Amino acid sequence: MEGKIVYSAIQPSGNLTIGNYVGSIRNWLAMQEEYECFFAMANMHAITVRQEPAELRRRTLELAALYIACGIDPERCTLYVQSQVPQHAELAWVLNTVTYVGEMERMTQFKDKSQKHADNINMGLMDYPVLMAADILLYQADFVPVGQDQTQHVEITRDIAIRFNNRFGETFTVPKALILKQGAKIGSLQEPAKKMSKSDENPNASVYLTDDKDAIVRKFKRAVTDSGSEIRYAPDEKPGISNLLTIYAAFAGKTVEEAEKEFAGKGYGEFKLAVGETVADKLAPVQAEQARILKDKGYLGGVLALGAERAFKAARKTLSKVYRKVGFYQGE
Ligand code: TYM
Image 1 (cartoon, rainbow, N blue to C red):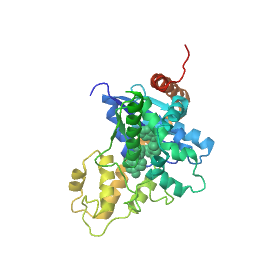
Image 2: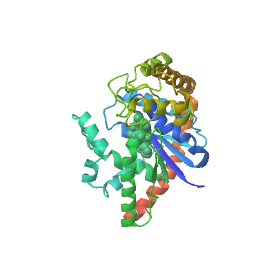
Image 3: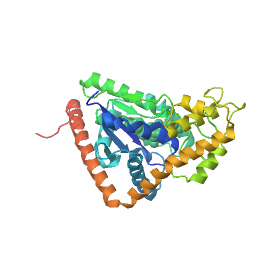
Image 4: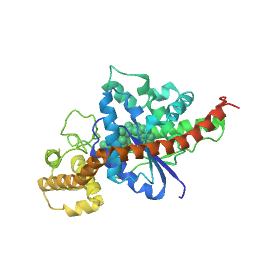
């Protein structure tokens, strides 16, 4: 699998949850060992819902520091801010012309967000998947590690790539989503069938990566469990306990089977406390490292400047190919 390219991104909007960590960043760590990786702060996607500008800027840096604190190596991977590479918007424009309005209207996330932000159903919100396709296709990515909620967007990216290749000749690598078997959809602690989300209004539903130990332990104590008393992985029958087992396994670096064995015969209370403490103890050093990196503005600025430069070079190559294929004049 030498030479394969991995692309993923997270929006610097809202507070990141342990769902984002388990479903994406944790999944990326092993990939940097094997593949050429591009990881972005998707701030252009973030503004499809209203953001407070100063906060968006701050969160962008916090996200970059978090990637590094979690173990993403900025020497090995290209870490960059999406808006610093103009080719994303440029390619999105071209891809818009091979994407149909009907396809975009059918996207689940568009429908959900239109309901949630009924006063702000802007063109960007609808165009969101095309910009995401541009992100992925610019870097000729083979693999896109994401959580379950993003699979539909990777599917449409594949459709757009195939359509473009058919119309204009081989241009883009057709990417594949990489979805974890366990952890691709961490559930809310209050309604485990629903995904844990940055934007949940109930503060007990989501554990944020910035939460301190007290808050984390408290939220897990209050987590909704199921009837019965057995600690067993059975997502349909026991969605609450299964969600907690998945979270525990991810943070303890164990399989769900190992976690089940460890808690066999124990009570819900003891189990929930163990999950909370495990998550908190794993996050504490990440939080400390993130804070340290954030203070080192020169270092972080350097990482992002280097990332933008590397990303720009790769993106320019693809965009120039696309412009040639569609017949855009590029000078003599
Ligand atoms: P975003 O910022 O909403 O989420 C970032 C990543 O976290 C995953 N995720 C979850 N995984 C498991 N359980 C959960 N409860 C959970 N909640 C979120 C998401 O699936 C995602 O992988 N559109 C993307 C950002 C993006 C992107 C890209 C991703 C922009 N361009 C190109 C891949 C490739 C998004 O909104 O992610």
